[in-house]
Length: 279
Image 1 (cartoon, rainbow, N blue to C red):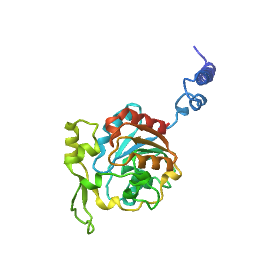
Image 2: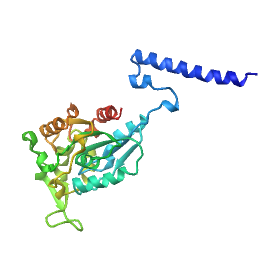
Image 3: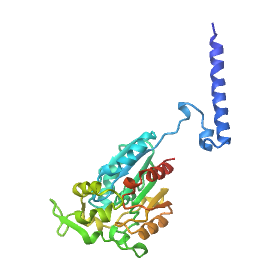
């Protein structure tokens, strides 16, 4: 029979062996230095961040499905935030309250107008470790979506093809803005099949027209590390405006030939960028 002393003796040996293996793997470049330095076992595991995906106007959370599936398969907790689409500050405050229900580190990912929301909602929250902008508005304080579209000399056609419908409680001159379905495919998602964009146009979630003109609050990208994906074929946010916002935020940046909805037409590339931020 093995004595209690021998049981106590074996455990440190296993721990030492595992630590040596981790260091060797680190030296061989098979794992990162941080992973090699960590003890192996439950006590040495780092906490993966919760990844929160924030959609923009004219879309809903389902647009993130191809990316969310990949992130879940990689072992991350994923939440798709239901964006109210009423204005950067108001929606940012809604996100700020949402974040209070989540423990541990967070990575916020915003598409299009969703970028303005994560910029506002993350400010002052120490749990937010990274911001990822996917063809998105990384607004500065006092800047509006409409003003950001002109950065770098850009111009967008989308404001020429909006259908505005009233909603209860809307201020005078405000309303819910939709992209005219006749122009939806060409402007929003020209690299997706017409059969897909037809459904997207029919089911689009409108954003308040006033949200285009509402000044943004203090941006989180001034203190939180940022990543940015520029869509070269974007017809909603001018690519030159995206470059200007990415540069201003000092974001780690990639460019791809994509329409405005890169998370649907190039989900693998978008997922890779999010994983870089999450690690």
